[in-house]
Image 1 (cartoon, rainbow, N blue to C red):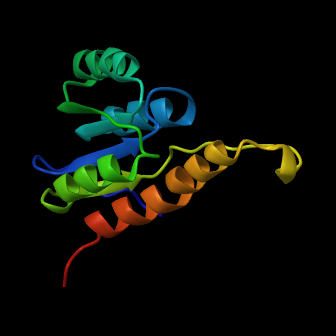
Image 2 (image 1 turned 90 degrees about the vertical axis):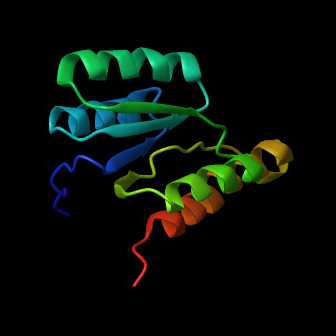
Length: 131
């Protein structure tokens, strides 16, 4: 899928931006001139990355330290995004569990569904174009 060109008012959102693939997605988008909104739980790591991107690429960078497994916080974030021009949404945040289901932590399993399914659904609906 082609990446839209940067726009002065639009933002590219990257969830899971505090490390790994999300961090690299944010770097790549900023290198292409996109202003970004970084989303993850670990705000201190997001602030560090935000400083790097501002300095290296002279783009606007916003930080949202949000636990996307918390439906209330996702609702607030989705409402914000619904009122903004979001040109790119990288739903990168996610967690996984491994092992026999009967031995897995039930609360962590529920958090996994909230993050990997519900948050992706809600944020995607929030930024879809309205016709």
